Length: 407
Image 1 (cartoon, rainbow, N blue to C red):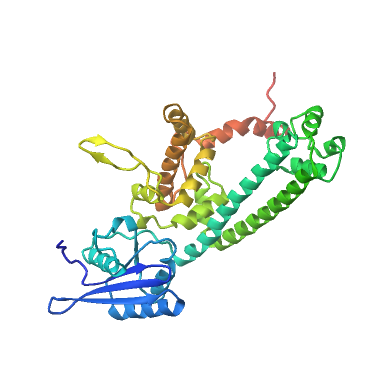
Image 2 (cartoon, rainbow, N blue to C red):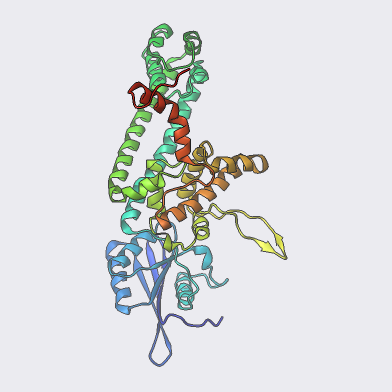
């Protein structure tokens, strides 16, 4: 295949766990192309050697596949010598069948790059890449916490305790205190003293729910699970504090994102470290949605639209957007009406994904324009006045700012 040349000096890198294969295509003064192959190890000294070799060639472009996490260390080594490498999607650079070798992969990458056929994936700045470690580990801890909480619910049910029937959250302050008292050997009548007055269930309902038959095995497993849950909750708190402290300079951006329905402080922080603050790297909301993997696929042939399956994209951002969509669907906003309209036609899960798609497009424009969210269907100022006006009028009347209205 004959490809036109756009870049005269390119380097392709085929990155593996223990080896990096490099191919440099250098156009000489007489028009010929010199091909240079090199292999490097994956240790720190090898990565430094790779970076110095690449810098000495003064390449126009350096490209590598986004293979797992193996690309990150070579990318950082190249970044340290002033080379901004392109990290490309592996499915965009499939090699010619029958020529699958590490050397062939590196040369194919260099050939495509030389012709200007490769688009770089989004790689955030170094400080946000480091914060991704904290954010993603926090997501994993939240998943682990949810599994352990479900396990506690299952074991309580197995032991005949039906506290979840009369209490909305068995891991709330009051319910957890009652569970710990039961495990300590207290009688249900004594446990009732720990019930909060805010619980809607009557004392008799709580007493019936606390009647069960917890064996020693139940108590042992529940003790261990509750200890683990509290340990994970403490770890999550530390992760959140570290993440928010590191994002202190981005306070204005975090405040801006929180004006969007369904987005809280920690959600805004986790989203920020994934997509960054500069939307020019994506160019358009469609490209951002495609990168996240929350927009329908594009598969059409002979005028017929085929399966529109979503691509994989970024699972961490997609999960955050679905969480935001769940929350936004319960707020007074245009997202709620959109969700209710889609729910009947498309079902719950597809409606949530569609709201997530709408949210990410909105986020693109908010960050690109540095503007707070303004709902197209709801006037929040009017809503606040309508909700608080009776209370304000009573206070103004009580303190004599306005005359009381005669009957």
